[in-house]
Length: 187
Length: 194
Image 1: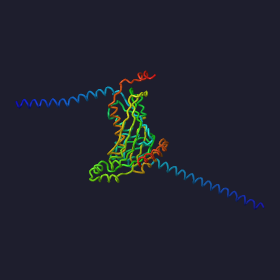
Image 2 (image 1 turned 90 degrees about the horizontal axis):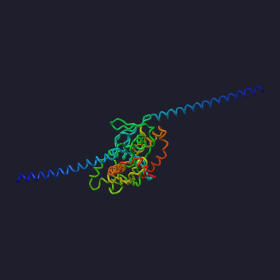
Image 3 (image 1 turned 90 degrees about the vertical axis):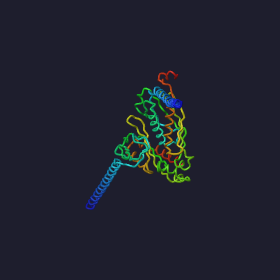
C-alpha cells in the first residue's frame, strides 16, 4: 500500500515536471522557427542617427549608431545588417531601412548619479522608423533608453539600442512588401 | 672735369653691384630658410605619432572599452590593444573628427563596489572627488564597402586636440569639417558642465 502511494506521488511529480519543462521548450521552438521564416529573407540597413535636437553631441550619435548595428547583429533576426552607405545593400533582394531620430535628450552626469543616486540620469527618447527601400513605413515606434545608477553616460545609448533591437524582434510585419505591391497601393 | 666724372660713375656702378649682390644674398638666404622650414614641416607630418587611449567602441574589430595605443604612421591610423595585434584604417577614409569632453568616475568596477560597501554614505563622498575629465575623440570613417563607421576613443585631457591636429595635418578631407567639430566640442563641454 505504502509503495503504491510512493509510486503514485513520483509519477505525479514527474508528470508535472515534464509538463513544466517540455511545454515552454516546444512553444519557444515554434516561436523561433516562425520568426525565422518570416524575417529570414529580410536584410536591414541602419542609417545614421538624425540628432533632431542640437544638444546631442556627436559621440552620442555615433554610439547609438554603432550599438544599433551591434545589437541587430546579435539578434540574428535579419539576414544581413548593413551600415549606411554600404554598396552591398543595393544588391540585397529584400531590404528594410532603419531610421532613428532623437526626440528628447537629457544630459546626465555620472558623478551626480554616484553622489545622489536619484538625480543625474542620462535619458534618450528616439523615434524609430522601419521603411522599405521605396520609403513605405513598415513600423514606427518611440523608444527610450537611459542610465540611472551605474555606468557612464554613453551606456544610455547601449540600453537604447538594445530596446530598439528588442522592439524589432517582438514586432511583426507582412512578409510580402514587394515593390510591385507598394506601387499598386500608391496612386 | 673728366677726371672727376669718371670716378663718380665708377663709384655708382660699384654701389649698384654691391646692392644687387646684397639683394641676391638676402633672396638666397630667404629661399634657404623657406626650404628648410618646408622640409621640417614635411618631416613633422610624416613622423610617427602615438598616444595612450581607451577604445570605447566602433573602431574596426578592436575590443570595446580596452586600453591601448593609438598611433598615426604615414597614412594609417592604428589602435593596438596592450598585448594584442593592431587594427588600422587609412587616414584618407576618415571623413570627420569630433572632439568632446566628459567627466567620468575613476577606478572602474572595483572602486564602484568599494564605494557601495562603504558605511554611512562614505562612498558618496569619495565619488565627489574620484572623477576625472577626459577628451572624447569621435572619428567618422568609411570602410572598404562604403559603410559609415563611428569610432569613439577616450583620451587624457588635452591629448584629443593633439590627435585631431595630427589627423587634420595629414588628411585633407578631415580638415574640411573642423569648424563643425569645434561647435560640437563647445556643445559637449557645455552639457557636461550643466
